[in-house]
Length: 615
Image (cartoon, rainbow, N blue to C red; front, side):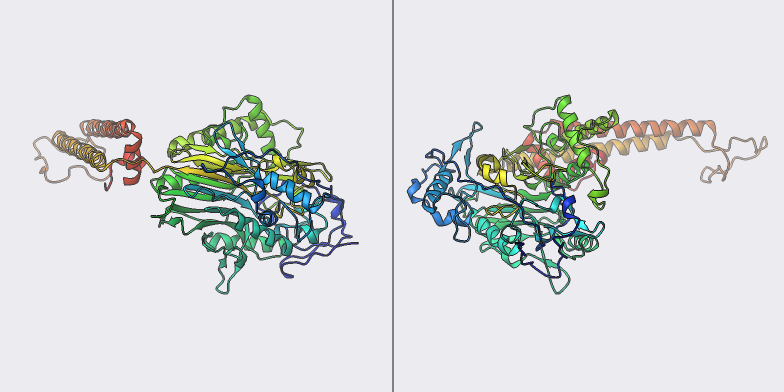
């Protein structure tokens, strides 16, 4: 029999009939963020591998904090149901009896292991608020309902990366009416301080703007959304390509009882990047958290150059706010392996070999293309083809450029070691087995944040890896990732040091201004009188008064005047270069805390170039 899922909105997207010739041509690859599938399509039922029960692990007495966790018998099994580890709609997912599955799921949920880097790895779904003084961050790509099996108006077919052929029956796996309650339970159960979301399908409001869908209005959280313009552009694009004027983008939620939002007018929020300048609320357990820029990201799916640029903008924004403390979380659409240009921005990623650069360049070329070009007509590089020498040179240049960005903006990024989060048929394949990708990441500045805990991903969920995402117990095509950080206060220059630094800046400016004035006076005194080079005056004829301009329009200055002008320009140029080098030397000699203070006082690069500041 064929299942007909209930669409979220009948006018949102047209459905593809079961008998359509497009289905045999579906290829399951990594879904691209710029294109949009939709809910509720008639699908041909496909066999789904039975996942089998999870493998129990030996529990350990560790936690995010110092106190031990309660024994297994005290685990709240209802919580396991809520987060999808146990049961679905009152039914157990595994062949084992409900009691045995519940016991095994509880054992898995209690499993913790100490990572070699000094943080603890917890099963996905473990509550993140066990230690009040720790900051917790969750990132989750929700798989917007419009991004599920839509009809691409350019081809009349379902977009290949949005077919999800393994997700059967669709009424139990893909339909929005069954997915959003599961997503909501996961989000509520995580109890994270910051929730970074991607692929949020926004509500259209009466005034033409867009708002957070009601189901995401979580108690105790405030939200930051993209600005109206980028969302409107996204809606128009989806209307043009998918016949559905729906806005999709990122959103950032934060707990108002523990965090407060600071006014930072320099932040620009677009549909693929939303940022918030947060700090710990006074009187809360997070009061030690200083001003930190937190961003949720959904990087470009096809262009490594665009991904690097999007990351650069984040660090540039932080520097413009006088910040070095950042958290960047989201679907980066790259595995951030050594040789990736995005990975070049991460401090603890090893230097790539030639083989690493070749591999990552090949992958990027295979996935590159115009976001408005249908994949079926795109001439991408075959997976077995090798990049040309020119391709590798462009890649190497981009890598070097990316490597310099953190130093330029004085932000050192560390990476949370998360596992694979995406499982689907390999690129261009019509059938399994499913393969996995590590596309979701959390990057952070370790100066004030020390990683204490993370969640597992597909490396600990063999059933989900085999079945593909989404499936009956994972409501999105990405797994969520999470991290918990120990917070320390932001180091800062004391008042005396700050006053001394400002005094050095003023003294430098005043001294250089005086030297410029003295040189200008000296040049005025040495300036020769301007006379025409032609001997138009007769012998004995009186010279024109000094107050009058001797040179007329079109007449060439005398050799003496020309020589003086050249010398004047040389002296001014040398003085300008000397002053620039002095300002650069002052900045280079500053300590790290003094540099932080300079970034807060002014634009350091502009001051070095011009010598002008208001500090």
